[in-house]
Length: 465
Image (cartoon, rainbow, N blue to C red; front, side, top):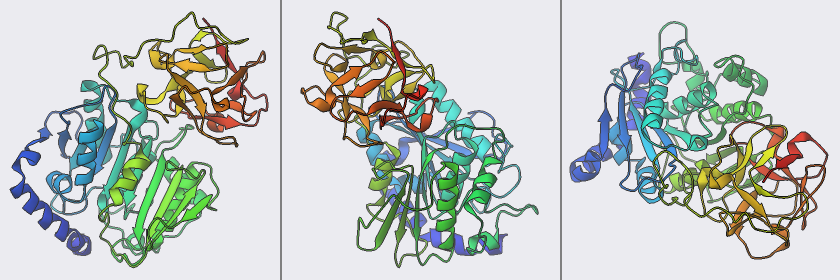
C-alpha cells in the first residue's frame, strides 16, 4: 500500500511545506485550533481538532473539513483550507478538523468497516466529533456540511452517502465516488479506481451509496464536485462518475440544467436547478492536475455550502435557538383564511421556518419541526402580506416554477402578496403559483418554492391563531 500511496503523498507535499511555514509564522492562529480528546467512539484513533471563532453565530453552521493524504489538521487549517477559517471568523460558523494518525496520514474509504454507516471505520469517529460539537454548541442542524481535498474529498463523498440525514451539502476537491475505493484485502488503495478505470452506470453508483445506509428513503445532500482535467493521481474520469452518483441519489437527469464558465479554464455544470446552491454542481478545471483547491476556489464552495449567511444576533438564551426580533403583532389584520402563528404543512406536519432563524434578506424558507420560535411565527395583513419578525415579508424571488421563496424587507410589491385560499393553498398574487414543498418533501430542511397549483398535499397548509 505504501508504494501505491507515493504519488498522492507527493502531490500533497507542497501544501504541507507551505502550511509548515505558516504554522511557524502564525502561532496565534494555530493556537486557536484546539485538540479535543475523549470526544466519543473513536475506533480508528483519529485526532479531533475544533475551531470556534471569537464571534459564534446564535445558531452556527458546522463545517467538517477533511485533509488530504500526508496532511494534518494544522496543515489544512493554515494552508489551502484557510479561506474556510477566514469565512468562519466572518460568519460565525464552527469547524471540525479530523486528523488521520496512520503512517500515510490518509483516511480509510476502502475497508468494509469504513463503507458502512456506524461500521467502526474513520467515518464513525468523524461522526462522534460532529455529535460532540452539536452537544456543546447550538449548531443549526440544517447547516451541517462537509468539504475535503483528495483523500478528504473521498471522505466527503463517503460521509455524505452514509449520513445523508446529518449533512445538508458537501464540496469535494479531486475525489472519487463513494465506494469507488472499496477493497477486500485490507489495503487502503484501489488502483482501478484511482486510474479512472472503474466505470459504472448512474444507477449502480447510486445503489452503491445507498447500500452504505440500508433502508434510508430520505433526501440526499447537495454536492459540489471539483476536478482538474490532467489529474493523474485520482484520474479525471472519476469526476464524471461522481456526477453520475450524486445526480442519481438526488433523482436528477445527467443532463445539466445550466452550463457556464466562471473563469476561462473552468466549465461549470449545474443539475436540478441553476442557482448558487444547485442540487449538484460540477466544476472542471482545464489543464490542472492534482492540486486543488487553488486560489479563490473556496469562495465558490463557501457560497454553495451556505456558509456565507449573515451571522444572526445572539439568542435571548443559549438554549432557545430563536431569533430575538419581536414577534409579529397578533393584532395584524389577516386576509381571508390567514392568521397569526405557525403555518403547518398538511403533508409533512412541519412548520414554515426561516432557515437558521436568520433575519437576512434572501434567506430561503423551509420545513422544520414546529418549535414555537419567532422564525416560525407568521402574520397575514389586510394588504395580503405574510410577515415574520414584524418587518420581513414572505417574498417570491421570481415568477416561474421552482422560484425560491424567501424573506425580504416588506416593500409592498406584488411578489410579497399572497392569497390564502379556502382549500389550504397559499397562492402568489404576482405569479399565480402556489407555495410548494420542493419535491413533495416532508423532512426537516425541505426548501419551499413556487410551483403550478395542482392540489397536492405538499401545497396545502393550515394556519391557526
